[in-house]
Length: 188
Image 1 (cartoon, rainbow, N blue to C red):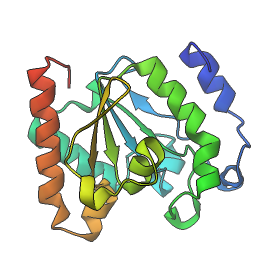
Image 2: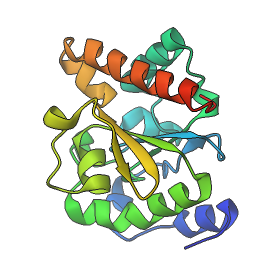
Image 3: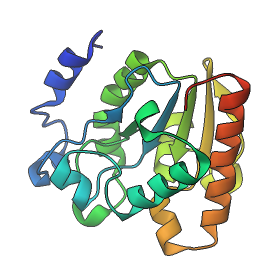
């Protein structure tokens, strides 16, 4: 584990720990406030993210930004990362070995950020962080506490693009987040 951002970023720069490295344009490390109270973890970069090297800049990210804006969540106050740092082909779900290869980078990001709350965006984030036995459909919107961090599983913004009905639940979940953050006097 690295105790500073520079060493961590340098360690991932030329990563070849899994087969995803062969198809990437950019490693999508993470973005935002490196001392954030709230961290969002998604699945992996899509085409737009791979091109720009920034998480959640494509259609799903734009939808998430609109929800942030509507609820008064400042994207610059949170930290956003993904389970895998390289784009899976055709935006498929990362395979277990790919996720495992990247998890120590993500763990190190969590250690450096020290968030109070982590929002798990979708099933891949939920299962890789809290365990394979978890289900996003059953646990979405339900707080979990593990090792002093509060977790909120919710839909991945890409799921909202496929199913309009999930937008309402996503909005409600972010409202729960906003309310808890305000109650705990956290910056969001």
